[in-house]
Image 1 (cartoon, rainbow, N blue to C red):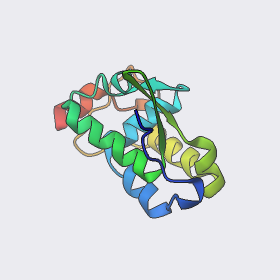
Image 2: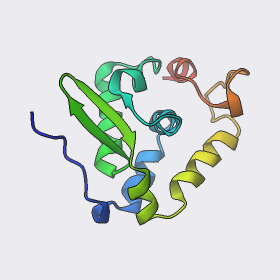
Image 3: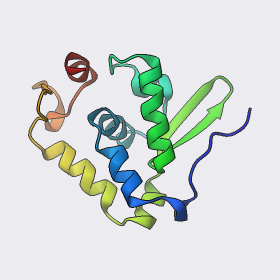
Length: 130
């Protein structure tokens, strides 16, 4: 199998990163990846309540923007954040976006469950609004 295409670090553009992070579903995926080293595609999108093709579109948008790294091993694809690359290109951006996501009031149309630390969105909340 051929590797999935990723932009080189020097080719990551701020406008692409910000556009990719502007979608609530993609922001939730990035938040989930920030809490762990690596997730499979199935684990990262498991509770989003979206069609597999829609979730794949979000993964591709994040990958094409240079936000995530997709690594294929056999039949599984593993996702991870490109923290070092993003920090090298745009120091503090990812940390600021994630902090703002955790500390922000609920987005219009999204319910935040009381049990989530920091009032984070859950896949069930997203599924209710999609």
